[in-house]
Every structure is written in C-alpha cells, then in structure tokens.
Image (tube, rainbow over all chains, first blue to last red; front, side):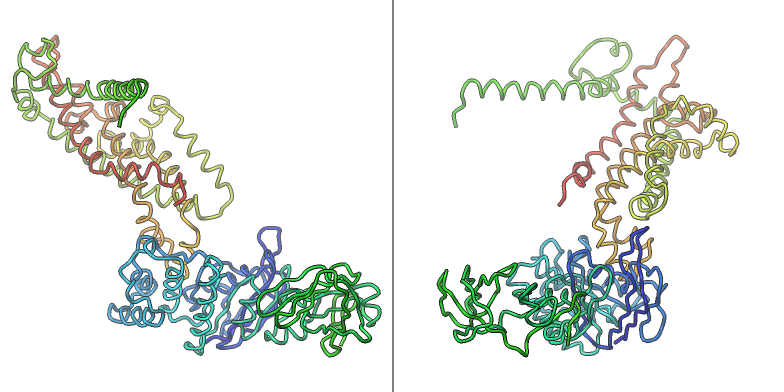
Length: 334
Length: 279
C-alpha cells in the first residue's frame, strides 16, 4: 500500500560502506525482488527499509513521508525471516497475535484477524501448537501469518525459502505469489540469491552488486535487455555464454553474449564449429556443451531428447536478433 | 544378561564410589539431624542410628529470644537480594549482550574482575560505604553487599545465555513493535527461565549462608540473620556450648534450601546445560 522512494541512500558499518548510494522507486502494490550474489548488500537494503538498521546518508520515504528515523513498528512493515524467528515459548496463536497485543488491540479484533490469516494459510488446526511441534514448512507459514496479521503497508521477505527443501520451496513460492495476488495492494519486497525465485515472483527485479543497483526492471527486461555483462550473466539458467577475443571482434564488440536457447545447429555456413564435450539432459531440454575454442565451452539448448554423441562435430549459428554485444566497460551496444 | 567378572568388578566399583560420595556429602547433615533430636548428655554419645526422639531442642530454639525474627530477616534479605540481583542482571545482560557500545568487553572483564576480590578485602570499604549511606544495622546493608557480590556471576551467566538467543527473534519482536522492555519481559525472560532459576537460586543460597557481612553490618540482635544468630547462640553459662539447639537451628535453616533445590532441580539441570549445546 506504500510507495517507497530511496534517494541516494548509503549505509556504512564503521569504515565499511555496504550500500554506496542507491536511488530506487518501489511502486505501490509492487512485488519487488532484490537479487544479487552474496555480500552485494541486498539483505542490508531490506533491513534499511524495515528500519532495523538506520540509513547513514540519503533519504527514504514511504508515501512521501520521510521515514529515516522512524522505528520499524511505526513504518507499518512486517518481515518474514529466513530462520522463521518464531517466539519459541508462544503457541502459534500467540506468535501471530503478539504484535497486535503490543499495540493494545481488542481481544475480539485480534482473534478475528489471527483466524482470518490462519485460514488464508491453512494453519487453523495448528493454532495451539508450539513452534517446535511444527515442520519447517508449517513454521514458515506461521511466520508469514504473523506478518499478515500486522496488516502491513510493506511486506518484507528475507530469503524465506532457503531453509526449505526443494519441493517445499517450489510450493511455498507458489503460495507467496498467490498471497501477493490475494492481498493485491500490499507492497512486497523479497530478497533472494536465487534468480529463479526472482524471475518467477517479481513484478520488477532489482539486481544489486557491491552496494550499487546494477539494473531495475521486469524479469523479461532483465532477461532480454540486460544493462551490463553482470546482469546478463546473473539472470538466466544456464548462464549466458560469453565470447571474447576474435569471436567478439567478428561482431564488433568486446564481449559477445548469447543465451543457450538462441543458438541453432546448422550444417551449412555455420558461424562456429566445434566438438561436443559434454551433455546435460534435464528431461525437457538437453544442454550440449560445444568446444569451439573459446575460454569456456558454448552451452547450446537442444529441445526434446535428441541425443548428441560425445566428440561429434557440430556447426552452430546464433540468432542475430538475440545477440548481446557489450563494450569494454561491460555496457551493451545497442 | 550375563556379565563377566570384570564387568561385575566395574559395576560394584562404580556403586561403591557413589555410596562414598553420598555418605561424605550427606553424613554431616544426617548427623546434625540425629543430634538435634537428642537431649541432655545423650548428645555426647556417638550413635549412628536414631536412639531417642526429643523435640526439646527445637522448642528451645523456636522460643529463643530472636530466632524467629532472624529467620524472617534472612528470608527478607535473601529474597530481596535475589529479586534485585535478577532485575539488575537481566537488564545489564541485555545491554551487554545485545547493545553495541564502546568498551563493552572491557566492562564485562571488569565485572568478572570484581568477583575475584575476597570478602575481607572489601569489608572495610564496604563498612564505610554502609555508614555513609546510613543503612548500618538494617537489612539493606546486607541486601546491598550481597547484591554486589552476586551480580558479577549472575550478569555473566545471563549474558552468556542471552548471547545464545537468536538475534532474529529479537528483530521479529522489534518489527512487531516491542520496546526493549517488552523484549526483555515478554520474549527473553520466558526463554531464559532455566537460567533465571539457576542464578536466582544460587544467589539465594549465597545470601542465606553468608556470615561475615551479616556479622559486621549488624549490631542489635533483632537485625541478625540466621547464620549469625546460630553462631551466637549461647548456653546457660559461658562454658556451655548449646550443641542441641545449634543443631536444631541448623536443620531448620537447611530444610528450606533443600526443598527449594528439589523443587527447581530439573530447571537447574536444564539451566546448567542449556546454552552449552545448540538446540
């Protein structure tokens, strides 16, 4: 429900500057994902927005109101932690009601809100249990429920899925997406290092690197029009192929990027030729690693289950409209 | 299940050792109980089993001039010391374990350093302080000095426990709108319950048993605590030491401690081991 604007925000811990000047607009009701390698400052950004850490310089506003020195509970934020951070001595109901109790809300009001949230997350039957009697997935739901009960303007998620096993992670990801849909106008900010989570959940993604914003955009913008080699390499799985030296020179650039699905096999007039050195069959697709003389073998996606033979010579041709050309500074040439 | 001779030897050896330890630790108290029920010259005969049963010593003690008063003094002083020490220690440990400030580790080391001084080293200074504060010969003299001596240990134990509590729980509480006071009372104290019981009980025992300060800081009989009262129990003449009443008094003041420890036994064990292992 809140529009968040960061203007030239920095954060230092002692001598070390972690956030080095960030300008960012997070729109009302948007699902914004912060993504980046570890140590890029994404969690710090989330903690700055939550108010758990205060910003060193710059300005942060929620709906136009400056919140630099406003304490977390007055900002109207709710946060879901990676480690769930449930209160171990309280049952699920009290965990969810704690914030409202502190705010001195009426008992009836609290009961209603907690029950609504529990129903939404299908944890009504767990309300009397203690956190230690719950599974990891259930604990995460309770943590989300605790956040919902606070009826926040801004919903913050700090890598909420990283402690869950793979199957549960996918299911919970789906539920978070559904939750965002159901809650409509709540602004959500989500931190992850997993670019698949970022791509599937986000309205817009903010890629961070070393305390700077590398690029902000919709998943498809980031995927199709990366603003730097870093973003191009970070978004997408498998990683984009990068070619340098004479391979790039042939296309008038310093680095040439091409995604695995944008390379076709072709036997007549191939652009590159090489030998198959490895294949990865993930079921739906077959990734073929072709040694063409570049630093790393070129990864080529071959849909379906067409088997490739090791050592086979193949000819390859990139799709011209999907070439990413970068200059010496790592910026795209368009 | 059959055991080899070697296993039998080990088993017997183990229980023999247990018996020795139990006898060494229990026997003095057992003998005190035994003696307290004897009367007259029977006290000077050596028996290891009860021979007669007389409550005369207990009656003598309880009807003695100020014994009941001394027990009340002791209960009050120990109780207030525990409450005050726990309150100060919990709030101090919160700061020492959670608030970042300059000189925090130096402060922690200093607190530990304070507990190295023997009582006698600070006795004179403390006496001056107590005269200065005008609390000489009042229970508050003991409350103050016991709190001073209990706090280093209490603060250290609670700081260690609090450090082990996950920081996210505190942050979740902050997000939920909790003030530091809310965090301490509604989130940390319930989690620290075993540690509080352990340190509180040890503080209580320390205050209950203390003798030197209690002797030095009181002058009138009505202000005495139990250990002093027992030590100063006098017989009919200067040459007579009233062993019977002394033993009865000792039993009377030991029983509450034994009961307290038994009640909180489980918590103490949990408190002494929790925090050592993550879980």
